[in-house]
Image (cartoon, rainbow, N blue to C red; front, side):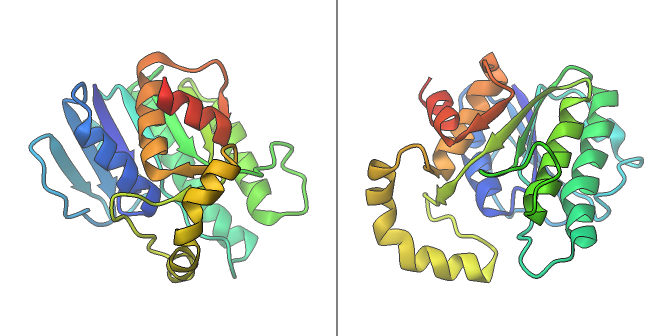
Length: 221
């Protein structure tokens, strides 16, 4: 497979990239983002693209992929809805719409979050915006799948780029293995997410929206 990864410098994106580089059937992994990951691997190629709202100048570099793993995102903490939507909705759709023209029917996996509001009318801002983003992606001519992980356990030395999340992970890290055993349907690891994305890219999945339980099941398939 040839896979394209957005957001590979983030916590989830790092985990996805690592699993892609480990997978024998991934012949090429290409990252696209404002900065390079710094990772080194013979099958890794990186596209540094500053304007993630437009891909007109690099469309040729984005063609020919079997799957796209879109993990780009920000915390909604302290953000106004319009600003959060510009990143969460506008940037996601800019990439997805370009890819739907370049490779219609490709597998496109978007990392959303547990609690996303598919009605787009709930009281929680981030959930509404994520729901609107999911719904728009599902209307495109792509094999689109939405991943809604709950609490994420970072493995393989991966850290969140968000300072608050880093502090929280330091505090909760000793408890995560226990929480994972006690609440298997609420906790998923970065490794699980990456393996699940590859499994869905290979074989699809019975649902278009995968909650934590589905992500774990796909990873184990």
